[in-house]
Length: 406
Image 1 (cartoon, helix red, strand yellow):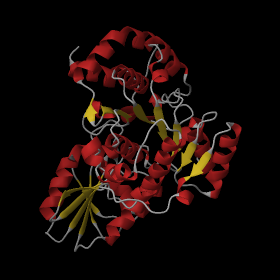
Image 2 (cartoon, one colour):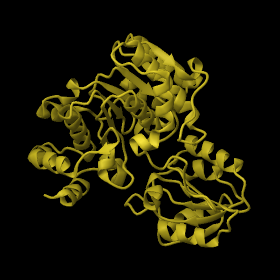
Image 3 (cartoon, one colour):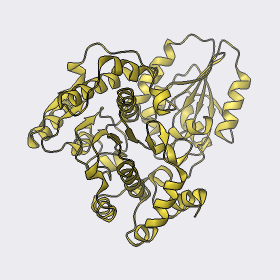
């Protein structure tokens, strides 16, 4: 199969959370271990940092990669989901995995995948580990897909585990209290391996402390330990927490004496994240006049911060291009959006996308008023058409809405 055929096969034949939601979630690591054995346990031959959390794990992973690249290391980076092309998920020093490697890997292992009912995510994790091991990376940053304890990435023994924060998201899988979700994320804490916690509450801190004690793992609460940070090219207000988490994680790496990272390299890594890693969609400015910002925030915790940041902007009229997926708790997120805005409702072009007319109807209950459009791009075009230079356009609600704009 060529690259497009390979990708189509992966997307269509096997469960994929990005497209299907609940039916793609697996509740144990049997397949992950089975695939690892089949591939010769590549994850055991690479040094890793493991990153979990409700929000900020993608930005944190990219910041870590950028700093380590500035320090001269060959850095693997595994993240999800992708915005435009599947290969965004697997990079070395900011360069995406080649189409040929993806094709060769899938073609070589396709019979095994089919015989063992491997999910899309399990295959992709196996591909990342295999690629990083074959390319002999110095270190790999591995972002959890969802949760932690039962995530297919959780077969690694990292140098450091990182949990950015805990919020109510994916509650149908991870539990509907912060403590329950913290328990799932804390599943990445390993015996004797230090763990960095980005943000915590009284409810989640006790879960982390218990798990760390059980595993004899040193625990570091970055928000208590890190004061000043450096500027970053990732401009969202929420990045302050992520920067503290990253700085604490680098301090631990330095203390282990396997890697040497200077303050100058931390500083230049944080200011060059996009250039070094290609990260997209984090308070990303698309145009100056009118100012147009897109952001992938899609749950209560993330959107609260983004909505506050919008209110700091100076504009005459606010235009919001909004689309969501169909398993989103609208009663939780819609009250966060400002009533003094013109809305352009749309459906992201994936099976999980929520019909825009349903979104409009629900939004009206919270006095968010606007029109339905046939696509994300049509909503965006209409918003641009309706603005003056002193207006502000925000595009968001879902990673998949942002993906269609970029």
